[in-house]
Length: 350
Image 1 (cartoon, helix red, strand yellow):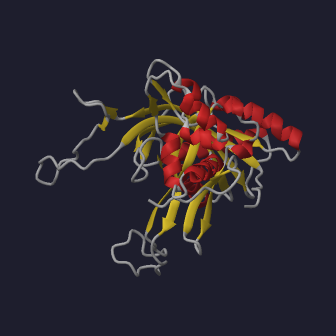
Image 2 (cartoon, helix red, strand yellow):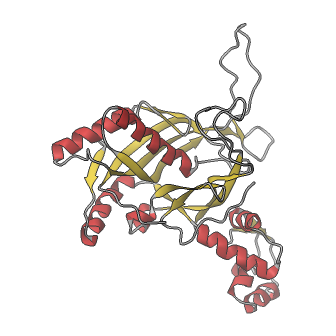
Image 3 (cartoon, rainbow, N blue to C red):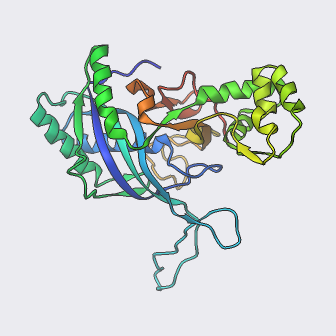
């Protein structure tokens, strides 16, 4: 992909979202996928364009300050379940059947790259346009949830930041805007780590797939107490990759207590990054009961990859934070890419 060129960065801080969708793929639940935020930026651009402004919103950086899934743990059960409702009432005033849906409240900040002919030239115009865009955004839906008014908006106003053309200026500007993302965590892609781990697993079992690697990286591995360190020593002697797969934690194997660990350090999470086609591309209106009869239609399934939540202070470059759409209709892929990914995500249709 070609590097994106933009003229400014728009900061929409501390957006409080109520009842956002928490189920974004058949296998995962939790924080909404990056496509929900890139789609929100695109919808916001269309709203601003309808007001006569020549602005183009591109990539989006996502920072989460607070996340509150609407779940509870029933008595006697180990797992969490979603808080379900069955409102509104039907036409006869009776309660409707419960349809399971996952909801979450969250507080996020977004950085959106901007270009276009109506980018302001002075500070007053920047403040006015940033406030106008924020006002429009607060009337929209984000990931299916409603954006509520933030009573502390005076402390966290929207900002329009001109993006310098030289590297020194960009480093200084990013250091300033990075402060607005804390306290919180930013979402980056770890697709390369997923690909490396899949290759390591295939050295042990040639039939291992990308889905096996994803589940292995995200799972919690329980190690029983034992004083026998022979397994750990044998795994370590077979090389770093094989040892990583066969021995979860060499030091934990020799422990006298049960231990819980992951394959790799860091807050790694499974992440839906887009969709893969499972049918041909149909002409507009050809498929009955489609939502939009003016747009070509195609059946798709989710594409999963690996993401990581990291502190903003660990990010040195704005491009490592940015997510952007990337469509390959010929290959049947409609995914989002992140600058932190060294290679493309490993498609895993589910």
